[in-house]
Length: 415
Image 1 (cartoon, rainbow, N blue to C red):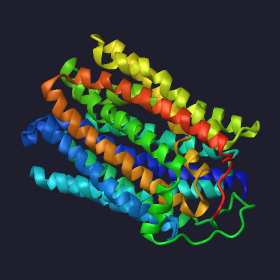
Image 2 (cartoon, rainbow, N blue to C red):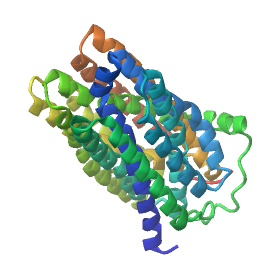
Image 3 (tube, helix red, strand yellow):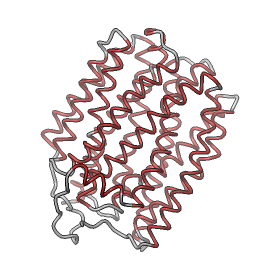
């Protein structure tokens, strides 16, 4: 596979990832409009976002298992069309229950995307470029969140939230048709030529049991649950926090609540990907090297998280978001590459599906917890308290890196 083709695949998947997160952020930014139209408080808004994350999480293990057995190209395209259609249909909702159902079904579609996309990238990119390839793909998360948040805020403020939902949904369906013509399925294990024939994975429950028995994979899942908990607290609630605490307009709150953090994350993910791949090329074990880089990103984010909820000026909050976003990007650059370093090739899809599932269960819990706690305490206190979670998972990740190096896990191999 030529270099330009390998990176072209990553770019095509980047566009899907961009729309994936643009759709999500469009939902979160217009919370104040949902609150007014459907007479909701923070708890019911939390239930709304938790419905998306909950169905996403429940579907995740099945999506990962399917990824290891079915053409990943078809799963990527099918997922894109399904969640886009559900986003567009949600614009027709006239009751809270209808809106809840539409957003929940969008979560089912999105669950099938990431396991297949990460598996495709690992087949096109070997260990010495995998972090950078996945880091570039991850930048689509941040770009989609920025553009989605901004557009949803502008459209919501001027002509209502329904137009934005229809626009994002229609764009996704059109992109799905284009990818049907362009995206190709590679042989499994293409970038790992020394591992021999790739065996077919076992049954659904056997795959889950095999992954549960992998100690380092378990630790990476625990870290991801904590990291996703924190990330989604800020992604979901920061625009609303800026709108209510500092009385910004909806469009400005939607843009500011996402852009500062996500633009910094783009820089962080690039730096993290370069640092991780550089360490791999210089002889360190891929898994341990990537985990140490990730842990440093988490530790450096702790002061910014502390500041975010206690700052009394918008400028200080946004500065904290820049620091948090930069460090979060360093962690997320090797998020899936680290997992692929410690699981067999035939379980790459299942491992991402399970990790994604449990991580988003944590994110769903975060919405319910913050929605409830903010009614009793303050949203600022909830935001600052997330620093404790980041510190704990950073220590866990350093311990995982030590175990990985001690046990000599240096590359993914088929079993």
